[in-house]
Length: 217
Image 1: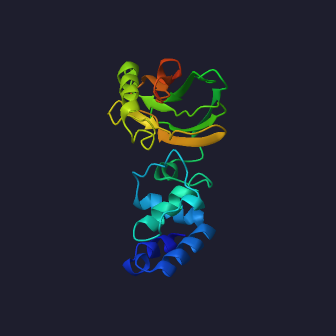
Image 2 (image 1 turned 45 degrees about the horizontal axis):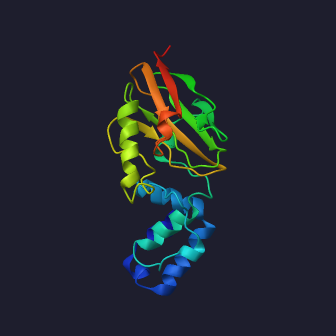
């Protein structure tokens, strides 16, 4: 997969219809390695809220080849990001689900130690899209209002309705019904009450929880 990703970036591949299609086809057979290599090279990539399908594929030329393949299959395989490689098997795992038809998290408080490796398994069993954003203490109103303002941004869905402000510390993508995602991070070194909210416009007023960070033992 890694080798195929490197090949996809070559100009002669991007200019040749048949080479591009061959790399794409081979990439689907080695998709985990391909996506991992792409994410390593593009750490700021954000998965689209709506996954592409073969019917929606654009022409596979130039840089579009790798990006199209990743957007099409990123929701279908489990991949490891840079943060996860830094974590060990001793990471604290927190399972959080949405509550169906109630716009709430089923876990509204959990405790971690400062500087601890944390893995949140977030599952959406509701009929609406949701995300989970961990923010700085005392910043719920600021982040929430910034999220509401994104409702007028035509590209907000591509940004997962996550405001680009420093108060946002860790975030999942926006996931649909029956989808699951994993958020891996190292908790803040400063003890305190760190809220988490859903930033889909309007949801944050009800959909809240808190990560309590305590001093490490």
